[in-house]
Image (cartoon, rainbow, N blue to C red):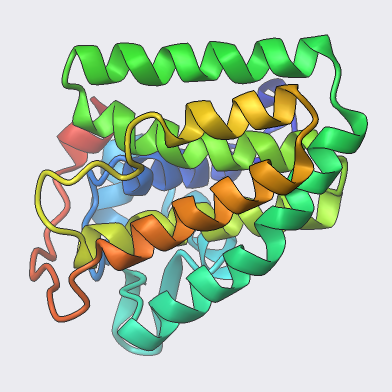
Length: 228
């Protein structure tokens, strides 16, 4: 969420928790979100849960079905391709924006993030690896200076994590190792052409690794794990 944590409503905090859980593959695509179980898990009223679900539905992460309830989105193969097609359009513009306005603090922030990714890989923390991989792309968007693209990437990255959960080959990293490093190196040197080419290759690499005939059938949410 773009607002400071102290200013977030209870519903926004719940929505953020669900988003992070999706990005770490702790909630499977297609999972049913029971209002009563969520209210019990988060220790809030069902009204707050409905508000959080509305926020998530507006971002496309949750689907609200009449007479059936709320479900984590389960993107189709066509939707998956559309998400990657849109990202291939947006992320070169993100690179241009970052390079045009980058400063030492931005580069430092990116390198700190890369270090966090390395530490997650070293400890084989797959959930952290997956979340940090998505966070890298959202960090770039936030540094680009385009608030509209930033908002779109905040929605697209969790959707991409859902797509990976549905169609990725088990134990395949969300983002191939070292590709983020090379993108940051090109950004730091101001090599826009190389940085864009690396990003496009990176996105194609991720999409091409997907098994577009596979999916998960797990529709149960373990709220203890989500909140733990």
